[in-house]
Length: 114
Image (cartoon, one colour):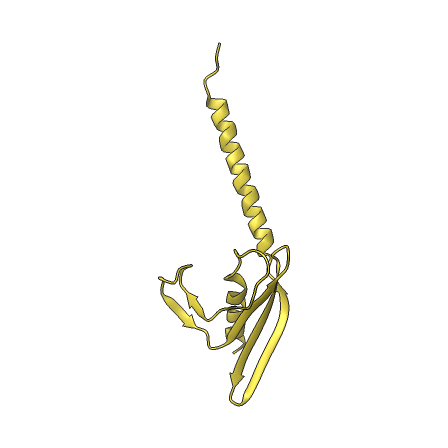
């Protein structure tokens, strides 16, 4: 059960990564093999998982996880750190460096006027 909770928790945190701003109770109920609803369904999650909020830097996520075992209902709400914001910033920095290097190479290869 702990492994399933960890998997569900990680899925809940990584799916809405590209959304900007505050989260508004985004439900996570299905796990797919690719980032498309046309891909194969891996798991229909039997636990309620909602993204409640995201920090301004995109690295902290507030989630709610709830599930039932027999007559008992368990609900957990808390914050966790997954450095997605830092990863996105690093990707953008590398893309900008690559673009600058390509532009510099094109300028170096341009014919010069005499």
